Length: 255
Length: 196
Image (cartoon, rainbow over all chains, first blue to last red; front, side, top):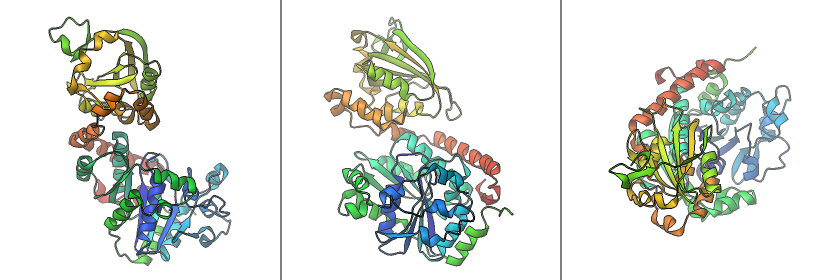
């Protein structure tokens, strides 16, 4: 295990899931990457990864006493290990958010990079857990005041739990935002990893149920994501230590 | 530009004539007000007073004018900021007291020539209402010359990011909220002690 990233935004519609899969595929050129849909209330990664009919998902892993192995919910797709989450309300209601910690600990054992597609909210324990568990957070923002405000808020929540900022991704950009990007770097604790243009290729990939880098690898947006991944500068870490931290350091076990 | 008045001030060129009140509400989402103005192709103005004052150094009182439903000028009568700067100051979460006024188009013509107070047609929908669909509808309703003239959609964002005090206030508020909620959720043990 090298490092766990939470891909977060604080508000919906910024393109977090597209970004998670795109960063994952770009990082997979050099690393063994596992992507987890940790947005257990509003899961949608399965639709982006062609896993609509996945029989076993993260929801099953978050329910006690189902004896489902993590490997059963892990799918090899597009050069990634993908752990999708189900979309049923019943699945969400039965899930115990704190079990995410154990799932992440187990996944961390045999992957290099773990990307947690995080909920677009901060209002519940299950919504903040990915940010609590990760080593660093990648904040996905649109270049608007509401999105930047929410992005700053996510960063401060993350910092409160000792999770640093890996970088900021400006997404759905129309026109030039060089000034805004330069200004944003002053306020975020990490670099602007890339500015990704608003793009038909992204919408087409979503409709096709494929990650952007599989559907339109030559698009400008895909190229920007590859640049962003290169700037993330994944750090070497001690896999066992990280797994131990997930297992024990976050939430006291309930008897 | 001053607050809407009877138009008899010496700086009348920058004065919005008082209009006919159409609606006065506290709205949780200012998009409601913008959509109403757009749908009725309002020529006039809205006064927007954010009810959230924590993040503002003082009170903000915004005036946003419309021509045929599309925003033209923005002004903060508390700080005297105009255009994108005013939008940035008004872009705070939470409810607004919003009033909509109708004004004869001819009486707004002079004010609408004030380039310095202009905002891009969709900027209020994007920055105040955080509503991309409304922004798109507003762009579609805007006359071509407005779309050509305003390539500065991101000016309000630049203004926001240059306001260090405001950003620090947002961060401080988020840190306090994070700690309060950590206690609520039993996550205090996971807080980083060095984080304040």
